[in-house]
Image (cartoon, rainbow over all chains, first blue to last red; front, side, top):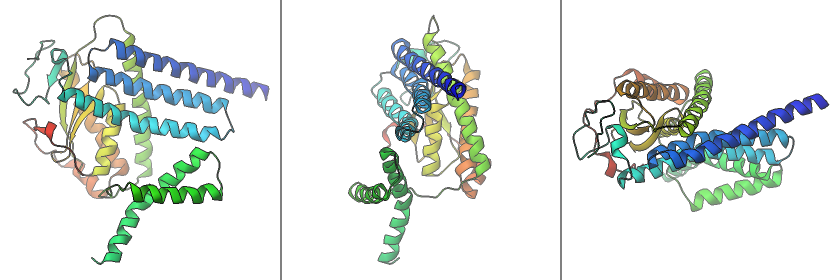
Length: 126
Length: 198
């Protein structure tokens, strides 16, 4: 009994720590990536998985509590909403030209100029 | 079509939404009871009546084996992409270039396209910028692509995600559409000003 409890505790701790670490990398990514679009990558993927892991860890620790259902909802809505908000932000960012075009290898969405014919690392921006 | 038919169809379109809302309500309370069920139903009806949503046209099927395969891939992709982005954020040195690509999808169903785009934003490398419902194209931002070969690999993986979603949730005609060639989109569509209205 005691053993099982401690194993569950270790798993919960691992989940919480790893989740917190991923959320930290999401924050670091927000600072270090160069434009809005790249930052949105950080805001969706490590962030979503981080929240999932923290919810898992919390659910293990709070086993049997009615709160666990809410954790499930949090995880579900995180997965549903993170891509949508990232999509909206990046869509607006692209239209408002908050995009580092010189850091794009290919830009097939550019309508004002012919399709880019970039070489490796060649700046394709205007 | 007579009026009762329309009302009945509208009710049938709303049923999945109602069930989902009642379920969420009960999960929020954390316990199951008749009071929660009844109050949840009342609130769900009130919400759908006050804030009506257009029905999602075109149903979906459910293929258990394909759904499992999709979910397994999804979880794996999610973990991989988080690790990649986390590493990209922490790695010392210059950040790599990105790319914006337009991929022509083969699916023509609102529900499936929603699932595909949701999945695409969570799988490695890609982030949906724009979706052109008419042309069935999706514009993606790719993070850290080294060369054009990597871009093409990403393009192939987008189509693979689409295929897994459609095989999991598509009706027979959606799955059949996978085998037909994608509509030609040689010139990038001037998609930015067209909103998906449906």
